[in-house]
Length: 251
Image 1 (tube, one colour):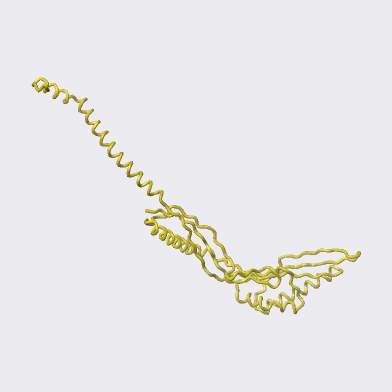
Image 2 (cartoon, one colour; image 1 turned 135 degrees about the vertical axis):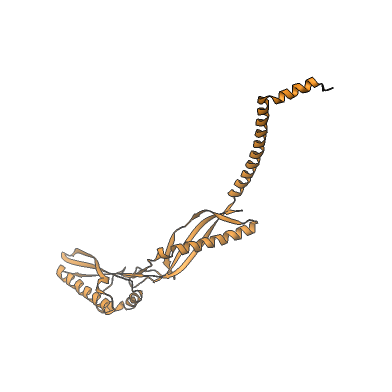
């Protein structure tokens, strides 16, 4: 049977009253409470980490039709003769005809500049032949006038100018930086729509962006045309395209 005598009770009270014992009990209580709180926090953290790992990677597309704002036409022509001065004289005549052609179309004189010249010589049965090859380049922001020049290019042939292969008009869109932000936003919106569809099918919700890659912008002919050969010209109507890759959190 337990000893309930006054002497035993007094000894128990004295033991509990000791400062060291009280500190030990208090420390034990704090440690126990810390273990409970820490366990809860650890469990909650693991749940949150698991949720953070849930994500979906999708691609978003943005396209825009634009019109080129720079026309470039490199015209290559040449002449061959038994002496250099005659070949050079023929090329000078062609140059004058080309300048006259563009002047009649209303292009300022400084839009047409010489961009290269080459002289070669070969002998046939001991007879030398000289070839002078000249390049002139038109650079203009007047797209409509450039298109008119292409439509009338055969007039150069009537004037005796023989255009070599590669003498084609090319069109360039230089305003990409002005539309980049809007197109990236459109592509990101398209990516989110795809992510929302995926989330709906899997019973989840789309959260914030985890990572994103803008991707490369491409500018191509809208109708698949290309230039480069004799009498073949590019088109001023372009399609700008960007594909973004976005990783969304799921919750």
